[in-house]
Picture 1: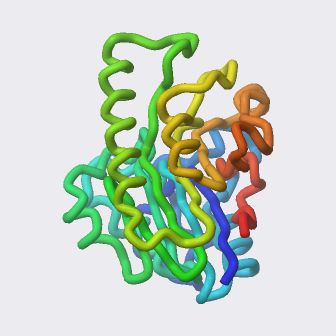
Picture 2: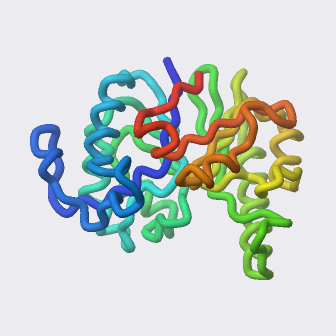
Picture 3: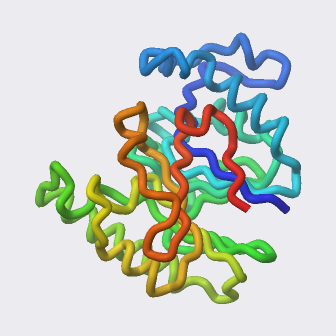
Amino acid sequence: MKVFALGDLHLSFTQSVTKVNLPGVPQHKPMSCFGPGWQDHGVKIFNNWSRMVDEEDLVLVPGDISWAMKLAETVYDFQYLSLLPGKKVLVQGNHDYWWHSISKVRSALPDGCYALQNDSFSVPGVTIVGTRGWLTPNNRVFTQHDEKIYRREIQRLELSLKSMKQRQPVVIAMFHYMPTNQEHQCNELIELLKQYRVDICIYGHLHGAEAHSMRLPARHWGIDFYLTAADFVHFAPMRII
């Protein structure tokens, strides 16, 4: 089994998706407005994922999965996910407005997909923990509202870490947000990762060359970090293990 990660799918399909008709299915929020690299990004992701990932592999999807506003509107985006090989573990992104009740989200997801929230997911050799994350203290902009959400995300990460009943040899933490600020200062999220001896941390959210330059170094605080935003990894799953 191989482990991959690919975040920020930003799907918004407007009709039923199959392997045959995918190139012609429009998205109601085309991402090409964010740069030419995003042109037909759904097709790029599908082709790369299908080529690289086998059914027995695991793919981590750290948020910003669908532009849908309501869970019922995710149907075609989830249909697209169902066409992709491998088991998928998802965490919420800041644009996943449809993600409310975790039980309803899990019921709506296609077979082979698991939504992670306040818990963990294990397969032989690997345990996955995580949460969405948020802006962290000493960020360039950090309000009282941000502080409240940040505190909640600390609690959710701790619940996820504490849920590891049968910890596997490798522990991977998933966030949507980079779990630190632009200066890469330590904070309570990082302290929890260190306390629970997390081996690998993946995240997305950062788009464009300037944001990509803010990413964490490949190894810091004894943890391996991977930025897996779709545009950074050229719309192909990044091999983690």
